[in-house]
Structure formats: structure tokens, C-alpha cells
Length: 96
Ligand SMILES: [Zn+2]
Ligand SMILES: [Zn+2]
Image 1 (cartoon, rainbow, N blue to C red):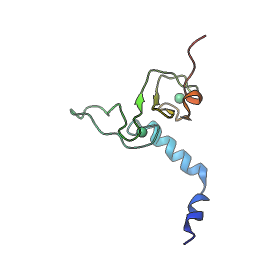
Image 2 (cartoon, rainbow, N blue to C red):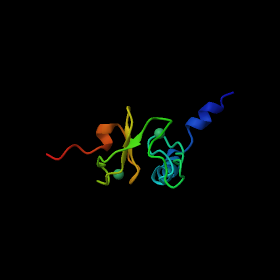
Image 3 (cartoon, rainbow, N blue to C red):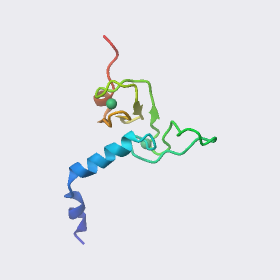
Image 4 (spheres, protein in one colour):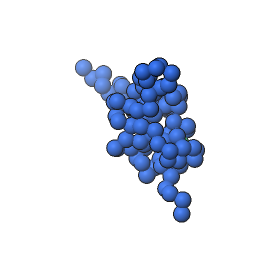
């Protein structure tokens, strides 16, 4: 019954690479990686995550400077470069 320790010690880097791929796919919420549904017409991915309440914003990412940041109440993530973290870590401040 000590299997839990094995899971924790699994290599972190591989896991992170595949998460980043999914984060940038446009088919998943970049914040929590939940698969996004389609809208009624099924032509576009939903621009809203039911799971964590994240939504796309026009705010720019600190990592890639693209306006592809999603945010929710607790944090933010970039769909362009897969940067994820707190809002202050992901979102560029307003121009000085
Ligand atoms: Zn989400
Ligand atoms: Zn980015």
C-alpha cells in the first residue's frame, strides 16, 4: 500500500513536456488542461473552461509577448508558449 510514493517520484520533466504540448494545442484549457467543449455550431472551440472558469484574455504573456493568456480567479496560463503560474508571473504589466 505504498504505491503513492512511486507516483510522486516519477520523472517530472517528461510529464511537463507533454503537458506543454496539450496546453498549446488549443483544444484544452491552458490553465488546468481540461478538454474544452465545442460551441453550438461546432465550428470553434469554446473560449471558456467550465472546469476552472478560465477564459482567454487579450493580455500579453511575459514569456512570448503574445496576447494568448488565459486567466481565472487563481492564476493564468499562456496558450502560446505554455507558461503557467500566478497572474503576475504570466501576464505582462501595462506599458509604462
Ligand atoms: Zn481550466
Ligand atoms: Zn506565452
